[in-house]
Image (cartoon, rainbow, N blue to C red; front, side, top):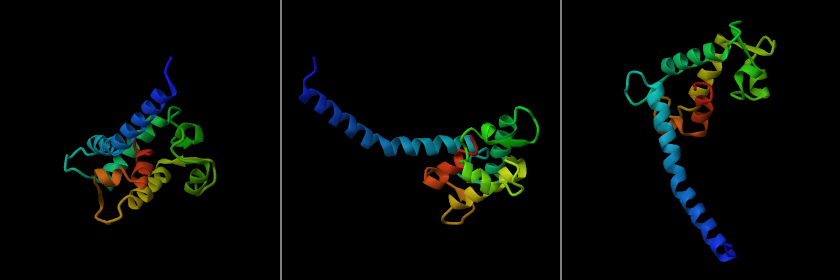
Length: 136
């Protein structure tokens, strides 16, 4: 049987490891996303690359090939509120153009220096992670 002191020590060690590895894991997620989305290997993702990845994903998410994505097909990539805001015709679905408009909006939010590209650090920001949900 494990003593309370041993459990406390294990918990403390687990928290320390998590605290130390959290930033490293987050950085590696940004770098792996960058590799996936950066076909020209320049170390950044530009809007054209992001939209290309989004269009490819849109096609995969549209199994009925009706040219739209509904909440079920989006699988949690957008909240109901975000879907409603991105749906100008209020039909409960997004066309490719509507989906790409959301991608562009999120890209701009993830690009605070307005240089037109996203690096691993920007992709790992809160806005960058929101964009990545629409790209992979």
